[in-house]
Image (cartoon, rainbow, N blue to C red; front, side, top):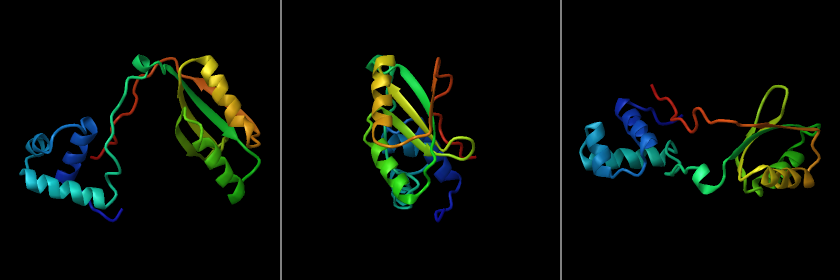
Length: 154
């Protein structure tokens, strides 16, 4: 990382992870800076790529997207061309909210958030439709105990 975080940067980032909708004035008050000094630090953190985006957490249940599925994928293919095709294909599946290449017994991990088992089945069919996969194993979340926790900074 090019940008070295100090204690104030960490406090700003912790506050933003807690609530990114707060005003700059409220954020500055919470971290003990003037509004201008806080704004300058935010701009520096954004320019350094430490802050990539500001977002909101939604309640999946209230939006009718209560099923969370973790999909483990194993493939026999490991060429750059296959990987590029696979990445592009998975990126078209709207219910895939997280997508990782991993080490270990499996090659990829997807987190899928969808309405119900029927909509997951449609997602599964879309997943296997264009790319050859060796194994697709699905794990269904029964309860979210901790989800979207802040990144620890200290």
